[in-house]
Every structure is written in structure tokens, then in C-alpha cells.
Length: 92
Image (cartoon, rainbow, N blue to C red; front, side):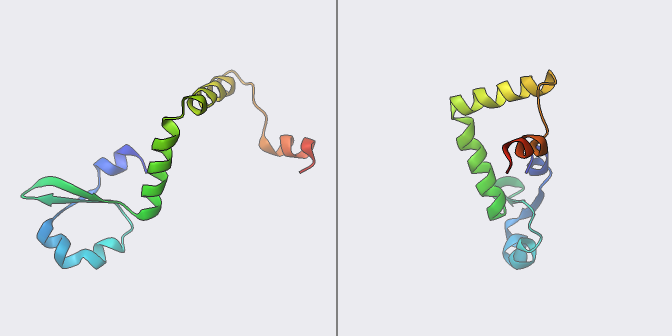
């Protein structure tokens, strides 16, 4: 899920949410619940929430962040190999 998707999420008033909760949940899309027109809560599909929490946790690991940044620099400089070639070389 991207920030753009979250910001574009459907806004639903509390009364509509109460009356149509089952139908809204079946869409498997984020929903912003509003109270008097103001965003109050966000409903996010479970799998997407787990992904977001994992990304947040990973972003706090400075060693991992440094490895990702290094990998991005190497990729941008053309220093990468397709996974298929690496696996073939490792005979996996």
C-alpha cells in the first residue's frame, strides 16, 4: 500500500460505516471513517497492515537501511546480476 492509496481512501461517515460495514469490508480497500466530516479512524486490510508494520520495523534497523541504500547505489551504477544467474552459479 502506498501513501497515495491511503490518502485516496474512501471516506465514510460513521452512520454509513455502521449500516454498510460488511459490504465495505468486502472491498478489501482502505476506508477512512469520519466523524462529523473529519477523519477519525482508518480501516486497513489485515495483510496490508502487517506489511506496513514490517516496513516500519525495518526502517528502524539502521544496518538494514544502510544495506538497502548501498544496494540501490550499486544497482544505479550497474553493479548487479540477475538472480537467475546467481542461483545458477550457486547450483540452486
